[in-house]
Length: 206
View (cartoon, one colour):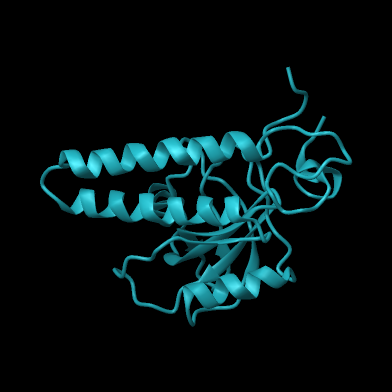
């Protein structure tokens, strides 16, 4: 059995000076500048349910909801901007109040400039120049698009279901490949062309 965690199990809070952050911001559009905000999870709220967590915080302490994106780094392969809601206190400070599996002291957040009620989309970009990772990003985007269309429809037809299953199968295949542990001086399984010890192996503990 491999020691250490799967590198794709736990997302990393990236450095906002990372060059790819600017590229991701361009994908999102003209919004706020990425900022680090404190993470103070609410009690007795389902993990990752930011809507409920923020509502509970507002009932308890006032303030308001603020929409935007959390920026996550998945090992050395993908940057993701995940549509998200944080809590804004009465003095204008922002806080992440949603519980997660992993405790973070702070998270990287981009405030949206759009009005409330406008649905924000998740965005992803590959970090490394790998055909496999580019395919992973494309599949993730396609799967999300299909799921969003299916939630708007009264029924999920067989073609939509087939597309979802096909995307998921290929995504799982790629995830198994990039998660494989390699020798330190071997090329990384993610296809970056970089040695494992300086690529995804750097993010594996144990």
